[in-house]
Amino acid sequence: MKLSVIVPTWNEAANIEACVSSALQCGAAEVIVSDGGSQDESITIVDAMNEPRVRWLRSPSGRGVQLRAAAEQATGDLLLFLHADNRLPVDALEQIRIADWPEWGGFRQRIEAGGIRYRLLEWGNAWRARVRSNVFGDQAIFV
Image (cartoon, rainbow, N blue to C red):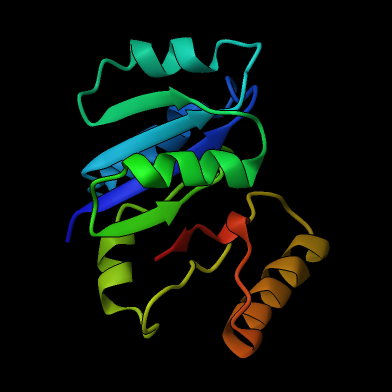
């Protein structure tokens, strides 16, 4: 299974390297960063990674527009849409392979912040995904 990870960006210099690195570590065949007009060093950081599996494209701004532009260029059998401030687990590709979703899915979210508020948010997002089949972008949607 060839995995293409698509990351929409707009001024994500603080997050992009860790995000892309997490996608590569889980076995992504390609990572496409779809930039919506960043004014920071986001693209410079992507270029400096000097990784042949990573490329970027300039897109009109707007998350949906950026996702579509990258999806149209992706070569993978499986697309995974990942927010730049998110990280994939090392075993993400294996989790996708064994997922009990017929055509699409998302990951269980873990927020790196303390407090009951964040645990409740994680629980609520997992419930919404499981019961209502409604996954948000912060859960890394795959199709």
